[in-house]
Image (cartoon, rainbow, N blue to C red; front, side, top):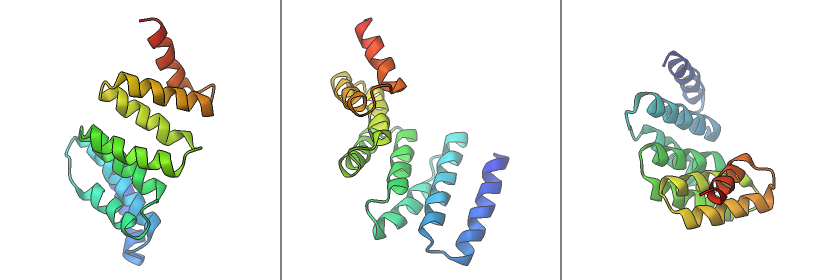
Length: 141
């Protein structure tokens, strides 16, 4: 928790100088996401920082990823999946949103959709470890 407090301190300094700095707001959101992860205290503060950035740029990849991760940590997997689906559409050749979506589908136990997403990941990145592990486990069941 000490590192999180130090990170908050640095980001707060940045936001004090420029409260509308998008990178600072996203960074503050991610610091709060990690605080949620550490403490299991599901404050909506993290979400608020990401939302402020998304008001001006609804395609900000860091804010969308952060918002999805927040929902995932809170157990709101459908919300996380919807956000990740948006990222997949906007950044269709970029595998990280697909990989995160795949993990959320596994958490939802949506095996068929997870299989489809794993196949999409492997089509873009044939040596992807996460998707390969799933395919191996699927074959061995």
